[in-house]
Length: 164
Image (tube, rainbow, N blue to C red; front, side, top):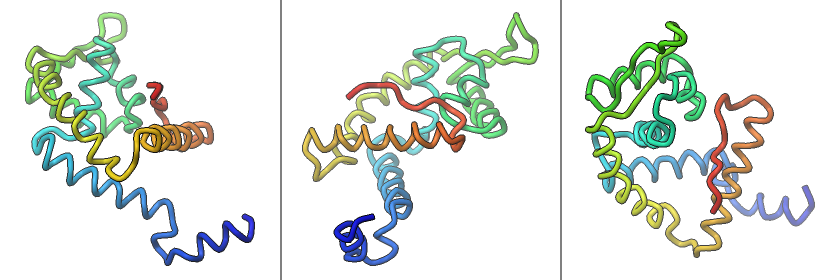
């Protein structure tokens, strides 16, 4: 770190100088905005799961867990709860009885379609104070952090592949 970089970091008091602290606070903003503007019944992770299944009908439970970077017990619990709410079906694979395959139900697809505009409306809330280029740059930076974390084994799943 150069002297100028050290001065910039030192000018901000702890804990605000730490990226982890800022990420945690931004996640708090995301959660508050999600419950206010999107849903109190469907979590952002459940929305992400429905989005993945809409793109990949018949994905295995393991593949969904990897895409969302969730461990086996967490994904199994979430899938069980979503199946109980009839948002998806969970059936044994005909090719491998140890594997579960997942499909959105009609109810799940309708809910996903209903939530999508609200989720898209959340983007300006989360990027308030940033112009379009800064918001795109933030997405690129976050994807780079995720890709680096995956490369060193901190993430089990894939990184987002959607271009800005």
